[in-house]
Image (spheres, rainbow, N blue to C red):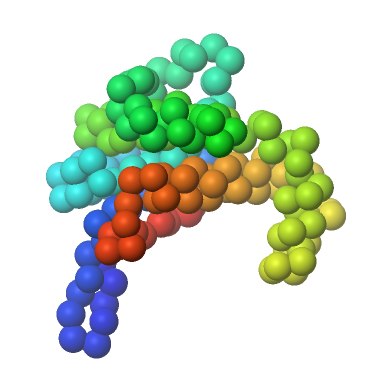
Length: 165
């Protein structure tokens, strides 16, 4: 919730972005799974997580249940825009909606993307190795996904909050 001077404002949509969505690596995974039930109960399908599609080539991620009909028309539009995504549910008790992002197409554009980050935000990427490049490009892909979702599904009246881990 956001607090104004005299009241709280709840978002209509909450996007949560993490490398550990459907990808058990460390503590963020545990944090996300433990709070998912409460957020799904409160926000229903307006709580949407975004994670990396790290097993995209096998489609055998045991934590992800793909649903080709969930947001079908938006997914098709997003794919026509060049976004490579899979939509479904996280295979945890709360079963929140998840969008998995294949960020690998951005590797060929990384110099252009990082140049823009430098020009706009003075974000230095010259010394970043793979442990920097992959998460940064995943974050970039997540931003493009959220932008596409917003443009297709939401209006200016919708209040959206995004939390990046």
